[in-house]
Image 1 (spheres, rainbow, N blue to C red):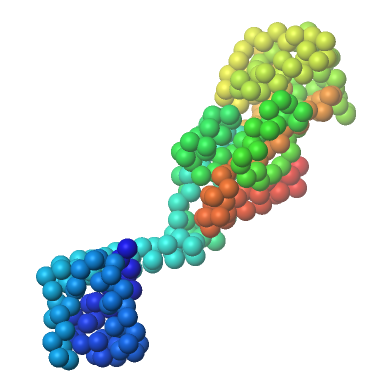
Image 2: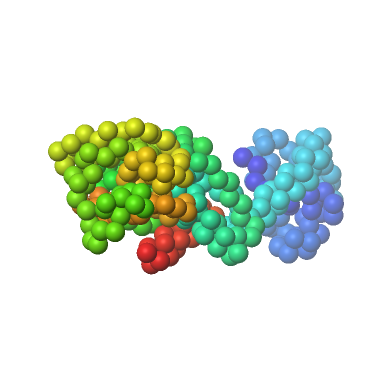
Length: 304
């Protein structure tokens, strides 16, 4: 294996013509230069210098290696500088995947803070719901994934191989039209009181959670509309076309007009987290992104 330090010594010997002069140029002793040249010749398996008295002459192999040495050393220097910049957060790239309500609430605050603190770090954002976002992380298509899971739901062990950074706890709330009989209710409402309503369902995972909670209360919801678009859910409720249950973060991501939020019984919560792989968690830009997402989650919780 050819080492960069040996190439630097070879170039110095070639340019100065002797071990002593090369030592003075490099700031080391003549025996140290001789020892490193012997190690380099041993590595390549052929003589690189012909010693004639006090001067050194390159062999054909030595000439070839010197020609390549400049480019190799320049490339290594550039690599060292780039890695140092990334390690010092003067540069870096993070690929972030988030579900929509996280993209419009937690992510903007976190990325604004990250850019202010580390303007050289670039973040690329895509949207995907879990479990797809988690699979993108495992397959190497992103560096950080925002995800959620409902408390008590099956599959809690699905993140055992990942670094899990908790961000906040999100509660399910009911959305009813502004003129609904329960719109002015103080305190919480049992979900069974909405059993006879028309329902507007959200994303597939939230839809599954809705059905599970309703069935636990002894009824199956009559879902008249289903959409992954949270503003559409709010708009349909506001138009009096039904009621809905959404995570609080999803409600906070839109401007609810013509609707009221009502606390629910039973209290259903989901855990919002940022996920990454153990090795990626050691990358400075990824670690800084996780820190800012955690701060954004804390601010979101405090504002409620």
